[in-house]
Length: 159
Image (tube, rainbow, N blue to C red; front, side, top):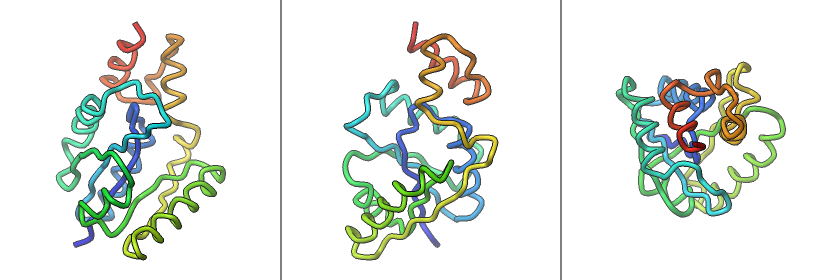
């Protein structure tokens, strides 16, 4: 049984993330969604809040679990006995960075971890958590970007 990890900040989780989660869960037997702490980014939500949001999103997917990790992604993958890292690609601009990270992770893991890219559904190709936060910070409508409960939590952060 392949163990797969889908990492990200998920701050907040978007429909684009959910698309990748559902598709990866349909391909693999065991999917772990891992919230990584990125020290370069200032998070809107705590790790615990993001875990709670993701648990709600995946509650009907029996082969998906949620965890968090601080440190290198390859260390998280090793801890989970994951052989594959799943990454979503929105556009060509994502590919160069993601390829560089995939190659770095493969070298760090002594060639024990591969990366699989899933193209995001075209209707979410423009979508990022940063966009959601920016629109929400000005009181704009984010209902097309995130589930209703995530929108409510996001607006509450800006009040």
